[in-house]
Length: 283
Ligand code: PAF
Image (tube, rainbow, N blue to C red; front, top):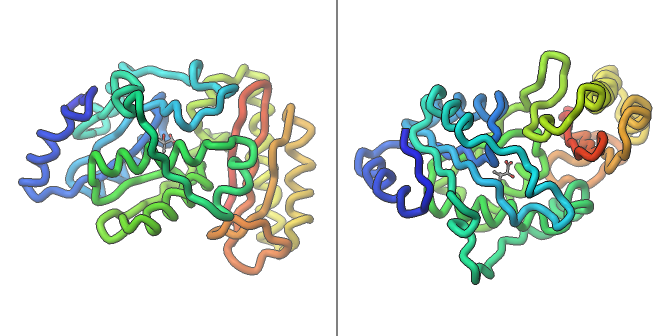
C-alpha cells in the first residue's frame, strides 16, 4: 500500500495507474476509521480497479469552538485497517499546510436550500470547508468514482450539487453508502469515541426516535409534525440539547409538512458535549 504524505507523492503512482487504464475510486475521510468507512472501501473495490483513501482532519470545516483539536486521530491504526482492506493508496497529509498554503483564499460555497438549514444553521462555514476540501481532493486524484456515507446526509447532498454545478459529473460518479450501525442501532461515527458508557446509552435514543417515526410512516402517517412529535418524545428526554429534528424533501432538503415525495428525517443532538447526527429515509 502506498502512503502519501504530500501531494507530490500522489502524482507518480497516479500517472502509472492512468497509463495502465485503471479505474480509481476515492473514499475521502477524516480518519479514525470504523466499519462505516470500511464498508465504503469494500463498495469502492467493486466499482474500480484501485481504491485511494484520504485521511485528513480538515480544519476548514470546524468552527472556532468546535472539536478540531480533540477530533480522534489514529493514523497507525487507520493504515493497518486500510492495508487489510486492500486499499491501494492512503493520502494522509502530514500537516494542514499540505492542503492549505498560508495564502489559501479560494473557497467553494454551495448556496441555496442545501446549506441554509440543518447542520448549516448551527455550523456556519462547515459546508464551505467540506466542499472546498472535497473539490481539492477530486482535483488531486481525478477519481472515476467517489464514495460518501449517508449518515452525513446533508454533506452528501452538498457534494452532489457541487459535482453537478461545477461539471464534474461527466467524469465522476458519486456513490452513497448506507449508514452502518452497531447491533443496537447506534450509527457508527468517529465521534462516538467521545461518549461515556451512560452517554452512549442515551445516544441510542436518536436511532430509537427515528425508528419510531419510520414505523409510524410505514403504517401510513404522512404528517411531518406527527412524525417529528413521535421521534421527539423518544429523543428529547435523553439528550442534553436537541439541535434540530426535521422532515425535509430528500433532494432539496427543504422542510415539508406532508410527505408526498421521498423525504428524510434528520436529527442532530448533543449528548454531553458530543454533537451527534443521524437520519432515516422516508419513502
Ligand atoms: O465526512 C467526512 O469525513 C468529511 O466531511 C470529508 C468528506 C472527508 C471532508 O473532510
